[in-house]
Image (cartoon, rainbow, N blue to C red; front, side, top):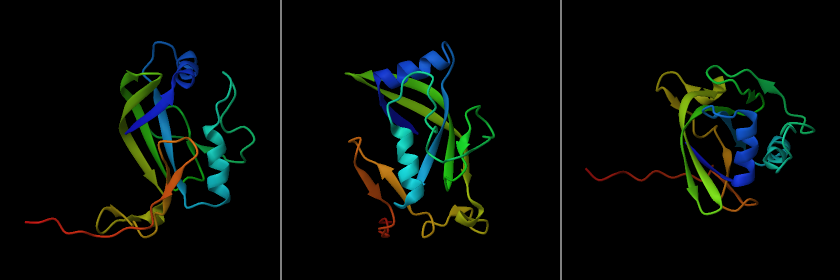
Length: 145
C-alpha cells in the first residue's frame, strides 16, 4: 500500500507522532454519492491539530491493529503501518504494510475467500488532487498458459 503526500501534510503527521512509525487507516469510497462527497472532505489540507472528520458527518469505528480509527461508513478499510518513506522532489511517497483489511460482510464471499467485486464499486483518487476514477467497469482477460 502506498500513498503520496505533499511535505506539509507529512510534517503535520510527524508533529502528531514524532519519532514513531506512522500508522494509518485508508478508506475505500463507494461509487460517487453523498458519502463519497463527505469522505472527499477529509482530503482537505488542514492546519495542525484540526481533525479531518470535523464537519463531514462521518463517524469512526475502532481499528483492530493500529491506533487510528477507521471510517465507519467506508465499505472497506486498510489498517497500515509505515514501511518506509521516499523523498521525491517536493513530495513524499509513504510505503506501508497492510496489517488488516476490514470489509463489510456482504462484500466477502466465505466460500471463495474473495471480495465480491460486483458489489464492491469504489472510486479511487488519481494523480491529480481533483480527479477520481470508478472501478465498476471490469472485464476478464485470461492469461496464456
